[in-house]
Amino acid sequence: MVPVVVVHGGSGKALTREEFCKLGVQEAALAGYHVLQQGGSALDAAEAAVIHLENNPIYNAGFGSALNELKDVEMDALIVDGRTLDCGAVAAVRRIANPIALSRLVMEKTNHVCLAGEGASRFAKAMGIKEVSEESLRTEYSIKKWEEARHFNEDSGEESKSGTVGAVVLDSKGDLASATSTGGMVKKMVGRVGDTPVIGCGGFADNLVGAVSATGHGEAIMKVTLSRLVIFHMEQGMSPSQAADTALEYMKTRVKGKGGIIVISKSGEWTAKFTNRRMAWATVKDGILHYGSQHGEHNTRPLANTSGHS
Amino acid sequence: MKPVIMVHGGAYAIPDAFADECMAAVKTAALEGFKVLVSGRSAVDAVESSVRSLEDNPILNAGHGAALNTNGEVELDALIMDGKTLAAGAVSSIKNISNPVTFARSVIEKTEHVMLTGTGADQFADCQGFPRVDTNELISEKERRNWEHRKRYGEGVQEQFNSQWVHDTVGAVALDSEGNVACATSTGGMCNKMVGRVGDSPIIGSGGYADNNIGAVSCTGHGESIMKVTLARLILFHMEQGKSAEEAAEEGLHYMGSRVGGGGGAIVVGRAGDWTARFTTERMAWASVKETTLSYGLNPNQVEVKLLQVV
Image (cartoon, rainbow over all chains, first blue to last red; front, top):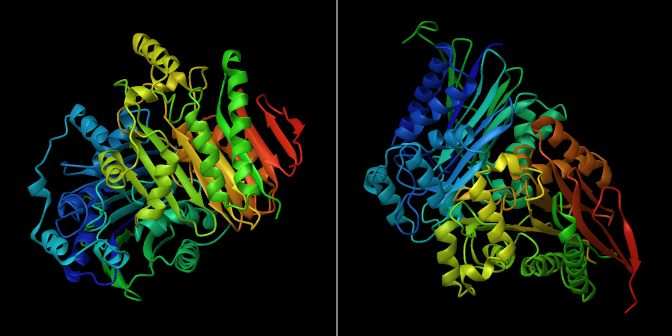
């Protein structure tokens, strides 16, 4: 099987700092691909790509997360293993750098699928994950965004959510994985859980069909269980691209929500689709890096060194 | 449209000692919800009313009588969904609230969000002036003993699965006279669960889903398995493909068993008023009311029928 890594950095009306966003997703896709080249699994690669984006303060995940109504950071993340449908999620977790790594621990070290709030923090501590300060997760940009958004509304939501990050991966064994992480929406209520950590909404992966990671207006994504809907359309014979278009169109007409998705099928077909104005995405397949952020934009460049790169 | 209400009181190996009380609870709750429907109110009102009735009954694991987490505390999850607009409200890991389903409904009505968790949800409850109860009021003697037993033997959730000690979720689905469907699900989760554990119940598409174009589903059983296959949405996908409520529920539950090894149950009402209660666990207490007939059951393939007096 030819391995594939697809990454997104969130969708929105305007991607402020668009060039940086485009760069970051390329680096993350390459980081995920590098893990595959070193013999890592789809799960390892998806996690690595998302950690890369969480650590990049330009995106709304990990460092640089959007601030809630009290100006604090509460993060959500989900990881899904397409082999077994095993998944791990954390919701409204605070003061850690990499929620995606914690979700993987929920999947691997507990009998549960999702841990929320203080329970998630307790678990992080028990796993020896270092606590980081609230201040370290804030950036000048996230503070500015918080000050600009007078109150939470759908519109600010859509824009401010430009930054949820996600990755889907197919490895050479044919295993699929999906990983998604976010700080949520600016000025969201304390304790608000968006689509990201909700299985079938923020992401899904099934070796028998494909893998999906979603971004956009979280409440709309949840109402239509967007990721599961895309997988369902693929089960019915649609290509990833048709399935993504159909599901996003349905979300727009049924609940008036916009968003974006990245998809890989079990045979390695992939797509990045969005109904917002922009979504930064990048893909690595067959030694070629693809990337873009506007509708119709599709850049490619060959990787300098496809094997043994370190 | 002839209104329909269905409720369940959880799918597990319900011990004989509790069987009668469980059956009485689901019958009462179904009749409560049906009263709401015949008075001309909506499917959402009906499922809320049925689930409140189940939450108030200490024999069932939701609201009063909820299972205790590893710290011996009650943390509750609930979901309610309106099939007309797909609007949904969910709360997870909330404390000191006796009717989580009503609280979940206020998330739909008073916020722009779908789901609130933990302390944030508690703060919202305070802002809304939501009635708070003392934790001890929610703890039943039965659940306290259950928890102590569990603590003593250090049994994990895996072992509990399908054992007679797993008490599960409660739920309701309804179709109203205007053709709207709704679902509601509420639970205390698994006994001795980790603090902050969120199961399938508040998860849209897993613990429940409702869409006027298809029907409504509420699920119960091994939460982690239900989530992995997004069971409620899966059953509705099958119905969208032309399967009957019964075939769809059978297929969804069978798939869950074979793919991820989990047992559970589901109640389903289709947009045309067809309904079913299916489960792969030993028992599930359920009841439904349509026209003048109260149907109910506990064991596989058991359907008892009682004619109601015409009002």
